[in-house]
Amino acid sequence: MKNHFYSAIAALQFLTRIPIRKQVPFTPEVLKLSTIWFPLAGAAIGLCIWLAGAVLQLVLPAYPAAALLVFFAVVLSGGLHMDGLMDTADGLLSNRDRDRVIEIMKDSRVGAMGVLACVLVLLLQWSLIGALFEMDSWSPLVMLPFIMSRYVMVWAIVVYPHTEAESGLGRYFMETNRKHLLASGVVMLFLFGVCLLGTAMIGSMGSYEHLSILAIPMHDFWLWGIVGGILLVVLLLAVTHWIACVVNRRIGGLSGDIYGAMGELTVSVGLVLLVIGVKWLGSL
Image (cartoon, rainbow, N blue to C red):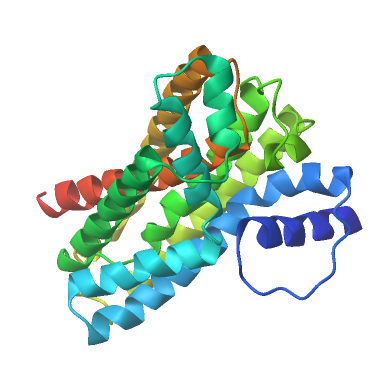
């Protein structure tokens, strides 16, 4: 039980910059167990983003508020996953052979492709968050892409091969197995349920009638919420599988940089799906 407590704290300390003073022994066993709680770290970031957004939309127009939230999200994660995205883009888009791609990804310097990938992903996230503000649909559901993005990292670590040359942060999690993946999935689904329940409770309080996502009857909200959650999981795992297959063909496995890139890309795709879902439900 103590190891599970330490592993939950380790996941928060490793994946976020939320100040937690507790000293944790970063042993191989604790690090393996910490993957179970990766979705919790995503939920912590998502919760901070949702709360900050709820305040910012009261004092700023949609898109300036969205810009501050994107900046806040990068700060909360310490830029860890964005760094992986930039290194991945530099390597995979370099048109070089396998060994050179791996060498480029290990280089701490950022190239043109990495900068372009970073700018485009941040621009996409900014526009999607701004769209949610404009559609009056800023609810706890915004936490879902952040939760799922951390779960797909565990999925990728367990399901797909690692590069033989892996020497970065990803090496600490190479012994993660399907038992950890299953437990992480249970945590992810529980947190999904909490987000749906939180949104439903906001609707039942009657003080947030302006939220378009709550304009539909509550029994329909639960139905579409569950169906939407399943679709979100399936589609984001499909995106993860596609990325893993592309990378595996190029360099023969995944690395810590790839896991970070997957995290940022699945947050972006998850926000796209959330905006589509809100727009579609609003048109019913």
